Length: 253
Image (cartoon, rainbow, N blue to C red; front, side, top):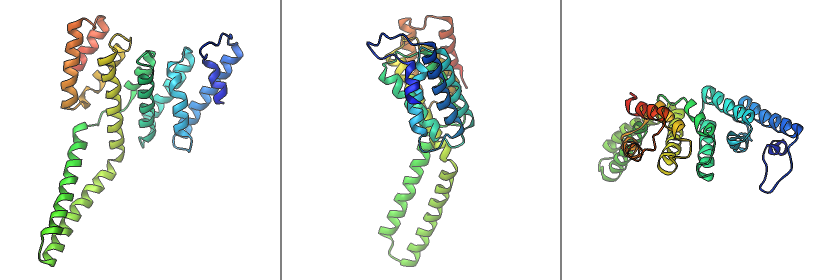
């Protein structure tokens, strides 16, 4: 089936004309992969399918691009675990990077359909700091206490705090994956802003940033302001839509 899907691509130097049958079979193969991924997002070959279908977001065939985009939108909306979503975003990031931003807007546009409203990039960092402090506290008690009974009591108290922290982390496993996904999305957006503002992806990038601006932590936001100010100063924000999306980034709650 992968071979059938590959009929939608022409290798360099290949001058053969693709027949209607070739195209039809290629579209059917990609559609089958997408339907399989929707039906079984966590079977043994899910990651392989993601790796295979992500490049078709940049295929010349509009039907195929739409098919893959709709597949990912469905997964972004219905997946409850988060691992497959993170894998999709990672592969999109690799595609944009490998092709040096010369991809169709469809590749970046699909990212704006991610459900990442509840992500707080600072919150995860704070939780990691808290756990490290508790671990350090436990180590100091073990090393410094002289009276065994008192030492055991203090260790038990700290162990209880650690268990509570772990329980909270287990509840937020999906949120953690979503946070990593968010970081990856911002990596894609920021690379486009810094390295390829004239690539034709700027409008979709700003639209995505406007939607997810509430998730940006202070470190990201500071860099974002610098980059957007530079783009405005150099006149890269030429179209009305691009300027509007830029204003949405700054005005998002």
